[in-house]
Image (cartoon, rainbow over all chains, first blue to last red; front, side, top):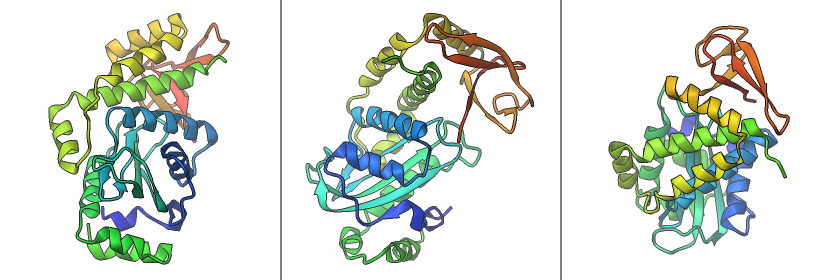
Length: 150
Length: 117
């Protein structure tokens, strides 16, 4: 599965407005279009995952992720925050680009780790942060993902 | 405020899944190659303890009993089918917790059932 197949206009925003790490998680979870109870549970689970070590991988990227019973298939979201948020990233720099990845405990297709790996690979591409910063709209983001063929 | 017992069980199951994942050397290696820090793995035990302390003791006992038989004691129900054993119309016994939450068990496999949206 290519990354571009997972993203649509409904799970991408280039205008995150959060002021904290927790608020970013809440906003990203909102892009998954789950019911309120599921959103609450997912938030708690993502926080627990963050407690084991930040998912801020540096260069302005964070990839919060977890497996949870509240979803029945792999779900993803992307958000961009122009000002940047302190995400306790490994390089100590604020995070601007956030990929959220959530999967059920068991997936027949087993996409979770491969997708996580592809997103991490995408985030490490040369000058990708500049390209993401310069995006004008969601279509540009989807086009950028497509051009990487990962 | 009391917490919904089924949601706590689901949360516990998710934490146990995460614990299993970070105990798997190969998976941890993959995470580290991707650039993720997992330097505070010991926190998972605290989280699990926090949740189990909030659970109705009888319910937690049932959970542990089911966990002896199945890797994942909870199973989703979709269209009347238990996705643990794939038998339809699975709802069997019910347990009313001290918090007055009703927990349903699959009539066929005994797993704790939950519905997802």
